[in-house]
Length: 375
Image (tube, rainbow, N blue to C red; front, side):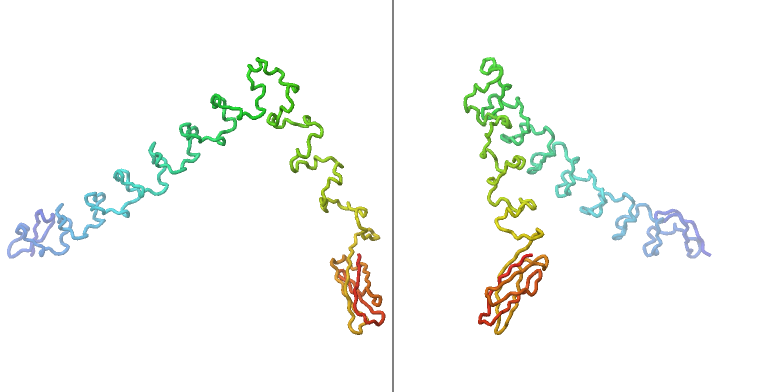
């Protein structure tokens, strides 16, 4: 029968029971094994468990190539000393992983900055200098009120169009800069004259009267705008040379004041005539008048005719230049030869058919029809 003993703790094995086969008489324990007696051929595959390994016994030489996987690494076990140069790529970095402390001074260059990413809070006070500002980049909205002082203006920059109305006051005008050509005619009144002129007797208190003025002393430059009205003008003082083109309008013309000699030749057309304004007495010719005093259309013309061989008659078709309203018009026709007679055969609004008949034998076989149609 086999005998088993309890082993002692040894550097290579943990505490557990191992059978020791007897050899001959007696019992064999682990103490009977010589140091290094158990070699690799004595160890079966998979027989060395984690409990048989001493702490720190597995070093780099014991690890096979690619034996350490991500699942074998403890959290925060990989530090900077384990990484080779250029081992970390962009795909290894999570969003927001690179913080300010990880950036070397001067590492961020212009090519690393995306467009429109630099905002006002990223700029230090006084960081933007003149070389950073593009041509015409500063707009009106970028300039604070009162920021442009006299030192910012170049000589001759301020023109008349830049000055607001009534913006120039007395303190803006230097001494003795206003000359006579700067003063508009009629702008100097008694209020602008100093008391010295009044006290010296140069001007009367009630002003200068008309008898003090020389003849033709008042010219156009002395008159203010709108000062000449109808009361100042004498009768018949305004002649045709004083009127501007198209100045006389309908409300300036008195009733019954336009006569025949005022009208230019051909100025009165159909647009200027009222309905029924033209009566027979206004016409230079005698018009066609009907019994019912209704308008009538009058047309006339001539047409040739020809009888062939022994023909005794022929038909001539007349086409009107303007159709009649209805076929109830009157048509009269005659020939230019006494042996031919014209008779009306039919009539429509657009024309009529006239039959030319030969009364007696004659060698003449052609002629002209003259006709008149009214209706």
